[in-house]
Length: 367
Image 1 (tube, helix red, strand yellow):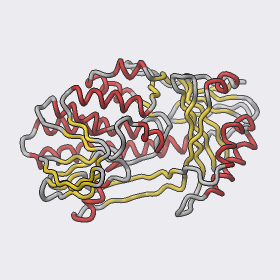
Image 2 (cartoon, helix red, strand yellow; image 1 turned 30 degrees about the horizontal axis):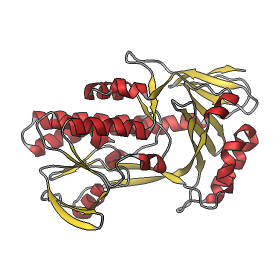
Image 3 (cartoon, helix red, strand yellow; image 1 turned 90 degrees about the horizontal axis):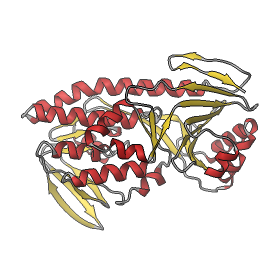
Image 4 (cartoon, one colour; image 1 turned 135 degrees about the vertical axis):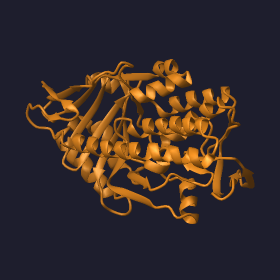
């Protein structure tokens, strides 16, 4: 989605922009890959406001006011998020945000090409080799921006041809998706303005509410194996159900599935974000834990700084270097924050009434 955010910003500078996407036009595949909602923080709000679509996003978003840690004994620990001058964190479905960004980019003159796969790119020139419905083509651009995620093909091409260093850190945690429908949320009295957490040793459930009254959730479990270990997921499910039997209805389908969809967390760091006429943004150069909306919002910040640098400097190399120097330290800080946030969530192990003091704030217990 960083590419769809960048496109209208560059269009406003007078550039002709083409967005090339391997997925389908409707964005539904985004939620097939990861149906958990994205969250928009204060920085993201300001960027969406600058794009002119913040009010539209608010219409399809849920304002998150609290974080709620559930205990196996029915008690809860509740932490209020501190609202900024621009408001609360916003929870929004990926497909809804994608649709708004897509429409806005198209309205500002961006050419959108879907179902088109990148095969190769050259940093010493401007050539892209693409495949659309099996037909191959070579295309030429003045600048190529890799906004193609943690498994970036643009980044892979750079690594094959250039002397840059990339660290891929596959974290010892995997995840599977589950959902709680609106009726069940109502029966369980799950507050639809709260981010919900269920945790036990080696396993964590995180649920984010939707506008329709349902909750999209991730089951996160420890798994050090090279390939996804279904047994590790089953062990995590059984462990968390031992403490939270009311989750049974939503997690049992994962236990029964012979081939569940299991994802893996990945951190990406590059010692340089650009080579020649190719530059990377977002997860392509700094993938991180998906907590607090840091990944998406940091990507949005990338595209704003890249746009600013391109507008300020006529020399492309100088502009890309400026962007790299300013954004890499900020992204590394965001990665550190995301790791700390995940550690904080793991520490919310249920027990008796308690209060946790941390850099994130104070958790209030309630029965």
